[in-house]
Image 1: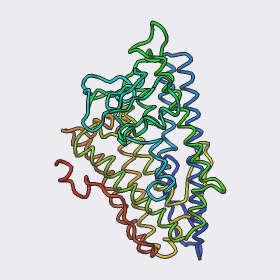
Image 2: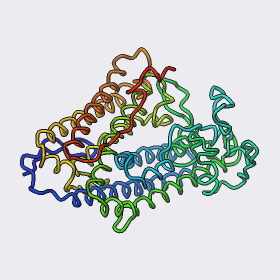
Image 3: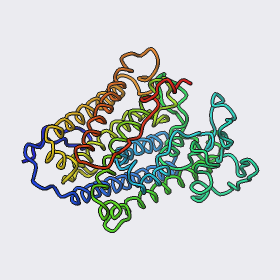
Length: 423
């Protein structure tokens, strides 16, 4: 019998397996994993459509109230999406697509006006201050780009990773975030971005110029986000390419794909690149949702997403709960003590991230937490890094226990070679 021992906020249910059903079907595990992926991307699509409604309302009647409503809808849209990040790092379809919707960090001067402190050039990026909202013609080296019309093709096919530079992020959640909040110029002090609603006003009320093009950019980027999420949802539906690739192939390879995603997100990506690096440098520019000060939520829901996949449990945004066969069952069948250890590690990680989230909502923002001379804030962030690292070590043992092919989880200099970060 499977009994619940711990429920955590955000929809993850961590379960202890007292007695596992004999002969867990690996294909059923893969199929249920695909079901959770489909539900997560569909929820992300639904939330993005809610964001689109609020953005349309903002552009139809710009005001402080409609801008605030759009910002709240953006934050709400991040909740289901971040839980889908556990499907990265193993599923090639997701990995090839993800940069369209969640690439970061970005050189925001590509998109719109920036403060003088941002600088006016970069040796690494000729598009650093291109400002497509202000310019109808962009020169990029010898190339001249016609930006007269802010279209989907301009953003997705021309500007996104322009010149092969990953920091040229023209589409996705973070481009929209920048347009809604503007730059956060507070460093590790209090306060997020504070773009005025008049940046979307018409006529003489327009601040900072080009309000019509700014509105067109925001509307177009949001429509692209919905298209991209709709496409990915279809890949996990019955007959979709991502589902077929996972469930119709070698089952042990499919299990390795699942664990690759869990271990790589836990360690190299989340513990390392997104958290430890910024903590080491005390640099708010390394903050994931840096314009909105929403990073604590993004980190937290990443940890919830990892727990979702391992336990086979996901609570949808309408409250419906999916629960079915998962890696948890396979481990419990083979090594029940190891499964209990993994469940304990997941619970500790979600609790540490939850404490970090609570501190960010009640004491100080995440970018203040990672600031220098803030030992208590730093410790709250480091606790999440430590918990993620500990659960990754258990995931490595699970790979061996299930006798899967060797997996190299994503690493990070901030964890593996910290001295290299300062070179």
